[in-house]
Length: 249
Image (cartoon, rainbow, N blue to C red; front, side, top):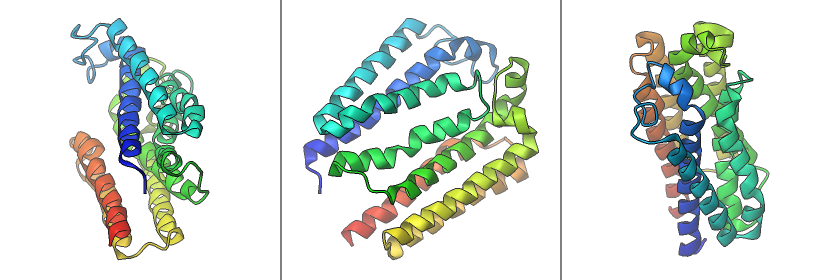
């Protein structure tokens, strides 16, 4: 069981990493955001925040993340630059590869392993099932979300799965990724000998993932923001709650 200071450092490190990634992404993409009808009202294109301010925030949050990693343990400190390279480097991937969605998935997929290392000081190979599950989950719903920018990306020579595979092909690949996610999540539950709480959490998580695809097929992209943000957020909380209940009960 981790001590409360370690728990606090982990939570703050996650917040710092998220802040660094979001601020850097806004800075790296602000020229494109200003041209894209979907993103032209973001803070930098509208002048609410200056590009230099966003970059300063990203650098500050990155430094805080490394410091917090060092306060947790030496392994986390050693691996913190690797995590930053992934989560910050993602912002440039659309310039040269359609697999940007997978890189984003890797950025979030390493979180379970990073948290385990922070708590225990070691790596558990079985966590790869969970890490890859998260990777395919994030990549899948990011492909769906990117459908909104398919024509813009094509016009401005940016790379994405929707530009590469078009609308229908992108939805098929997202569905394949999410089937892999569901399979890997249940394999992980089996790996840890999970009981009913974990199993119910996995089932509800899977149903919410499937519902997103049903909704997109029925309604197109009208509710994609709800699917991208709300439903995936709820799905992750339910899945995590299953493990919390499993641990305590």
